[in-house]
Image (cartoon, rainbow, N blue to C red; front, side, top):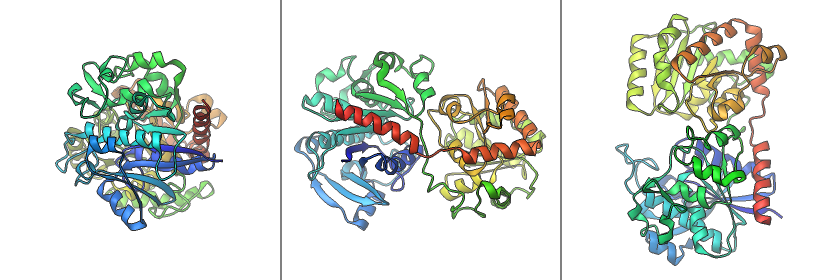
Amino acid sequence: MSLPLLSVASEAFPLIKTGGLADVVGALPQALAEQGVAVRTLIPAYPAVLAEAARVGAAESPLTPGLEAQAGPGRLLAFTSHGRDFIALDLPQFFNREGAPYLTPEGRDWPDNPLRFAALSRAAAEIGLHGIEGWKPAVVHAHDWQAGLTPAYLHYAGQPRPGTVITIHNIAFAGKCALSLRERMHLPPEALLPEGVEFYGSLSLLKGGIAFADRVTTVSPTYAAEICTPEGGMGFDGILRARGAAVSGILNGIDTEAWDPRTDAALAAKFDPLNLIKRGANKAELQARFGLPRSPDTLVYGVVSRLSWQKGLDLLLQVLPELMASGAQLAVLGNGDRPLEDGFRAAMQAHPGQISCVIGYNEPLAHLVQAGVDALLVPSRFEPCGLTQLYALRYGAVPVVGRVGGLADTIIDANPMALAAGAATGLQFSPITAEGLAAALRRTAILYANRTAWKQMQVNGLATDVSWREPARHYAALYRSLAAA
């Protein structure tokens, strides 16, 4: 018999996506089905989600009186789309808005985000306790701060409850708000004790999960260790160390059907490990799309990223003179912090023909970048797992990454021993500084000139299992242990 699981998140591909969280939440259920875990995913009913629910036809259920008292009139919509089972929380006053899921059309955080996602967590807890239309989960899996209060609501209910897991995708986002919102969130007074959701004078939605979930997971083993330190824990290190063996890391995978160079319609030429020569057509198309001179032998670096301090893109701006002096080209796709956007725009104007950037995000273009660049730069200062380097492995781009978090766990550095063994898949560098990145670029140029070693790294990357198969096995074992307990 399948184990019933409720997954709770603020976004899920292909219905709504702002980043890697959606990719994880969208892809994992299909891999878990092969492990005998039947997943239903609870997400907010944003306009795009409502449109899909209407298109495929959804079964409607009323809200419980407690949730309606907290969040106002609404309903639950159950439907199947793209082979995945969804439950949409339709609270028009919270989620039926123009703009991105978390941001106003002007690009600022919605001021009521804490209340919006507290309602999502409360809905998850109500489904966990009472079920929906005859279905009841054995385990509830909350993702990141937006679903962080789910384990807290289940704890404070004081009733028999399902097992609970929270996955921290990025501990830098704690979901902090004023303590005065406690009553509007329908949390009991004791929730504001230090052992509750209080966090340095604020209320933290993420702490609700860290404090009360049966198990706390992160998206890579190295990141699980990093967040238990003062340097990486963002203030949560103490409580995470106190949770002890309840904290662990399970590495992310990717959707290998959506990301498959043998079938990808976004590519100029499809390819596989036995036909790497066809990859050259994607490099030519990439150079054309970014306005770079067509040059098959020029080393082309790529970036597909949120432009932020965390991602280390300010370091890349600092080392551009050295990159330009080497004769390489750089194609950047992403958006984020305005100073970094302006920095890459200025660099493109100063170095036409060598640097080009597309500010924004375009999913098909992201696929072409992965298939066309020679090396993908991921100089992150911290990185819970990272998916872009996994896409790079899948598409024959050689990742150049900071030695942190999931980047350290997924890329085998091209050190002399790994090269001699024919095992290298990319380059790692540390410390995460401009000097460290510059040294990595010099190593990359040397390796690129050795076409035999470079091709071997590409082949190794293409042969790496970056699917959800193994992570799903670990998650399924975790769920079953909680259900049995």
